[in-house]
Image (cartoon, rainbow, N blue to C red; front, top):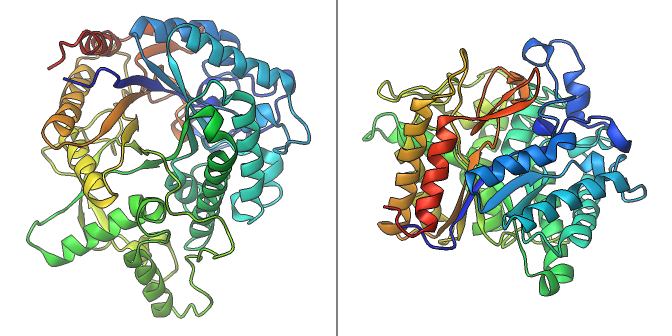
Length: 467
């Protein structure tokens, strides 16, 4: 049985679904810029229209109602609300849009969970240095406070930043996400640092100015795979696994939930690699200033995005130059027994989620946990009767139930990624994660079989019959 007040949700993000990229006074974001450069995205596709949720919100609402969701996770487009990224110019059409979305959800007895930042920085702020600039933290705090003030009377679950590890690494180390920088071994650590500073400032603002009246909760959504040593008895594989966890989940969870600082294993690995390569400047992993908002304790729940698992051994690095791979010295391998979903990286490992939840309980002081994303992709020929995905959700949700009942883990909710097929970043529209299929020629939404099955799971749980 799931708790009666368990949150059953699905998730989307603004750039991936809204479209209307320059409608009604919206400013450009870094993803608008990135997608309009040739060769960045599969088939040179972009999110200019995407699912056109900006104009077709009522259709999305029908999908949400059809599934019987209790919660819906969406993100605000910073550049739609504040076109130049600052509160000096507020776009009232953007405010009206999100007011309608929130009010419609509440009228339908669906609670919104709102992400303030899901990869789409206003281009005006990127032009001033973006997440590499220390000043970004107070700009984000101003934006967050604007949202708390404007929408916080109705929104009670907030995520400040979605997947800072992905933003930092894919956007500033690998260059495959916006803003497309490849500043190996340096920029990602700086970006992650400023994201944590921004998150902490926003949390403290909420805590001191809005919490007593609005009574909501604020967190940061962290992505992690589950990692296990390739050879269980091998000390080198075990150490590599610990490093992998530290460089992925620990990078952000350790400062917020454990010590207020980065994992020692992460800093020592980075500094050792710097010495080895003759890099004698200050540590590439910045330090938190005592004069700034404390990072420790700045999450009211643990928000986890989980997709897959990996076996780990040492290696996989670029030996002769500074880079995150060399710092981490951990090579990830797939177990041949794991089925693969449409994407080569997405091995299907439902029990990895239960193991990761147990690790979070034991390592991060038994927090309340929302699984804010979990999903299964389809590529190639369209299958509305997506039997493999049905099995995936059934098995995964069963592992979540075991985590609650047998492991005593305080899981409060589960959000499928995604409500509907959408613009899947560098993969464009070639990858489908939806509970609803979107035909991008006419933007019609059609329920997948997995959507029907998910609706049944929710309905059973709501009536107290779930096993």
